[in-house]
Amino acid sequence: MKINLKKLLSGAVERIPFEGTADLGAEELYGAHPFRYPVSYRGEVTSHLGVLRLTGEVSTAYATACARCLKPLEIPLCADVQMVLVQEQDGEEEAEDVFVIEGDEVDPEDVLIPALYFEIDMAYLCKEDCKGLCPHCGADRNVTTCDCGDQQIDDRLAVLKTLLDKKQDN
Image (cartoon, rainbow, N blue to C red):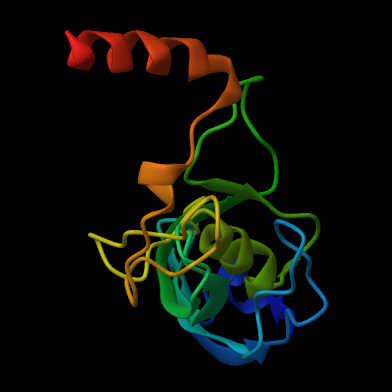
């Protein structure tokens, strides 16, 4: 959905509200398709003293897995955006809160969807004290206990185990 900015630029109106949804189901991120639900957004474009400003919020649910135990998770994601719309960027430096538009139109999705991506963490946990999976048998340590850690000895450290055994014999 594109918003025509001519009325704002001419001063005929001071604000143009917008609302919509976007389907990111085909987007791949970290080898998965985490956007199973539509992304909803709403906001407005305002003009004050010739400066165009887009403010809005965007939200969805992000499907992922716990980084330790691989339990499926759905994380609510939302981002609030305040962006100045300009037709030309002054200087070579890029400002974080400036979005360059071409012509007299802006697509709110072009501004809001990238802000949602910045809210995604690299890893999520099902709970803060998640114990994860046993690296030897694969058991979920949150559900069951295993004694694999006591039985397994890294071959590279087996020589050290013999030293400990000798010390205990003395």
